[in-house]
Length: 275
Image 1 (cartoon, rainbow, N blue to C red):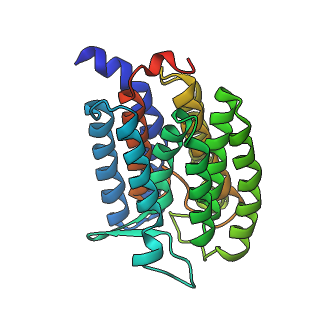
Image 2 (cartoon, helix red, strand yellow):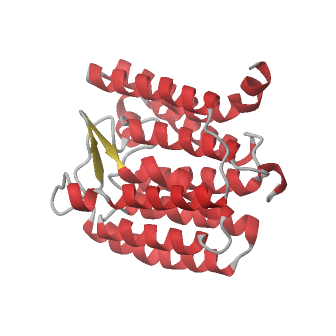
């Protein structure tokens, strides 16, 4: 257990750091108590997911998992809820989870490992992001494709990146909603009244990106897509009214990045691929 803790603690730290800073901002900024409860509960669940992990699985199971993730990502288009023709949330009991933040981190990890099916899977996900429409998810998918390209130098991932920018622009033109306090634009909102907290949130998310990219001990084939997908979500949140990943209110990103790391640790022969 001690060895597993040492191995996986950096991955957990990359998630927990911005979540804890975000909780401090919510507590001092007057956020609804339910926001703190949900994010705290999601962090506990994320810790269990990262530390306990998931069983190892081979290529067949990876393909099935990828199909399931794509289906979950697309499910809001069938089930709603929707607002102004925008459907990007999964209703799970009393919770509404952002489908892209829940599924894209793991999808990026799995796609990077699949040389033949990976680029098409990301392309399909980009089309789903356009249909929702969701600029943030499109940017996260671009980040995942950039991470995969950095390791594999596969021109097909490069095509996904190029096409992704076109899709992201189209999604941005139709997919913006008003900002919700403590969910979107939290760094910008904190600047006038709590500049120190705004700086801490910025540093915590930047630190999470860097840890995911370089500090989790996973091979590059897992680190780069994960870290770059987080950067994509964060960049979208800085550009416009999209959820701030990990630091803002919402369980989806916390659980999504925990699952991505658990899956990355479980992939067979991971240390030999792209290390």
